[in-house]
Structures are given as C-alpha cells and as structure tokens.
Image (cartoon, rainbow, N blue to C red; front, side, top):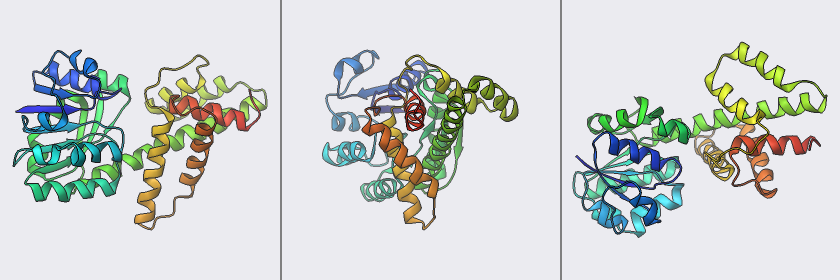
Length: 289
C-alpha cells in the first residue's frame, strides 16, 4: 500500500522515518519543504496532491484547527480516493473525531483514530503505544504500520472517537502525576529536605517506568529538550474538560491542572517541556527560586 504522511514535527519525523526504514512506500508533506526532503522520500507539493496518490493517509498534526484546515481547507477530503483510509495519530478532540468520521463516510473513505502514547524518543525507538479505534477490518489492514511504529497497539472500539477519549484521559492521568510530583517536590524543597532521596524512595514503592522517567526530568536542573511543550499540555487538559462536560462527568482536578498550566503560560513557559514547566511553576508558587 502507498502511504502519505502529513506533519513532520517532533513526533511525526521519527515516525515517518521508521515507516521508511520498514520499507513502506511513502510520500510526505510538511509546511517546511526542507524538513520533508531530509527524509529522502517523495515530497508532495501540497496536502491535496499527496492525498491523490495514497491508499492510507497518516496525519500527525498539532490540534483540531490544524487537522480541520488540512482536511477541509486544503482539499485533502476531496482529493482522497474512494476506499482510502485516513489514520489520524495525533491528540485531537472527541468532537473533531466524530465530525471527521461523518465527513469521511459521506466521501466513501474510512476514518481511524490511532493516537499514540510516547515522547519523541519513544517514537525514534519504535516504542510508541498505539491506541486505535474504527472498523475492525480496516484497523487490521493498517496493523503492519502500527508494528513499524510502536511496541504495542490496541483496538479499543469500532467508533474512532473512542480512541481519542482514551488518549485524552491518559494524558490527563500523566499530567496529574506530574502535578502531584511537582507539588510534593515543592513541599520538600521548601522544608529544606532532600527531595532527590524522597524520589528514590517513591520509585522503590511505585516501580513505575513512567513515574521514573518524568520524575528524573523534573529533578534535572539543566535545561531539558522540548519533547512536548506546555502549550500542548494545556490543550490536552482543555480537551479532557470538554469531554467531561459533554458526558456530564465532574473532574475537579482538571480545573486545577488547567489553572496551573495557564499560570505557567502567563509566566512565559509555554514552549518549555511540560514536565519542566509545571515543576518550575509549582516551585515559584511556593516561593522557591
């Protein structure tokens, strides 16, 4: 199958590179052509030109607005062939997934949501966790692509929006973990006790790779590489709050997270990695330099 890939950012570039290395017939598009050409695969002139060539379209775009623009304003929906599959692998809202499902059905395409858990280093190492939802037969057809991208994949439902709900709930879980670790570190630091030793004890208790990975990043004093900027973390918290509103579920801690992320943005941390940004903002709130 011929596969198109749109969106070569922090996550998209290593994902596209892994598909190329797996022997997938790949054509790509990115707003910065030089970045796309670095992959040494065919580069489409625009999104619609790419869509006309492929059986499967993968998008890895930053948010609802970017995804809707590519599909509706840049001609991709009309350009895709009947029977084509659109595989959306970024974190977008339940509402936009539902909208795209309807639009693709009307156009004779299949829409599959398959967001991923993992940072850019996981993408580079083919260690992503793929959460997919959509018609079972079409999801099975694209499983070889998932195997080229990640360590595991799960089919979580027949309706594409279900995968998006899994993803935003999962990101809420991760951001809540970052917030609570940051608050614990701030308390220990303010009391002039050893928060590094505390972290070692907690890792012996939890024995969780994701706690350990994020905790080490938060304890590191030097500037961290930006794998996931805070502004995207704020977007994801807003997405979970929108879903909670639509399903009438109280999620009071989501409001705490949104307020703290917003404070960090207002203090100029929007483009810092979200774990570093939150732990710094929590420390500042506690009067710690």
